[in-house]
Image 1 (spheres, rainbow, N blue to C red):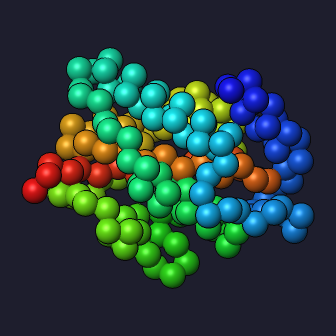
Image 2: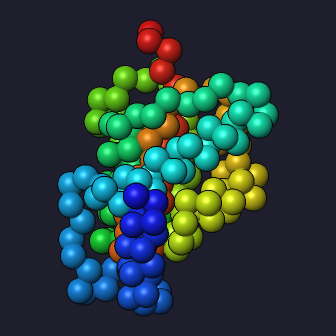
Image 3: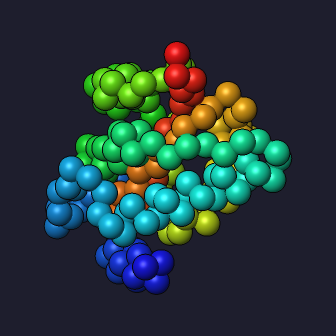
Length: 167
């Protein structure tokens, strides 16, 4: 499965152009991640928990709902040609999670990245940045959704963290 995802990813990257958003021949994103995108998202999730274990933090729990929110933001960045946490409509990561009615006690951080070819590469980039690393290693978060969108000028990666204590 990992080899198939990598081959698909390499095929996507071979057709990448420079610059902003997707090329005109990019197909529109689907409503959910493809199996290859989901595999990459779960790889990032596993790497997050490996990083947290190295500093004796509890693992985060996978959130399929937050992964959907993260994927939608990743695809939106490509389609509407922007690269920020807040979309052009002014909607923040926290507002996107709330709009999906994800049960949470508090919003955590969001990490975004573009053009890192593998899950290992994107995690290395995030862990090399103080702010992104702080999100990954925050003791205050309990859940994580990861979205990946494979398209030209990408892949596009998004991590959405939050805390849910059952309250």
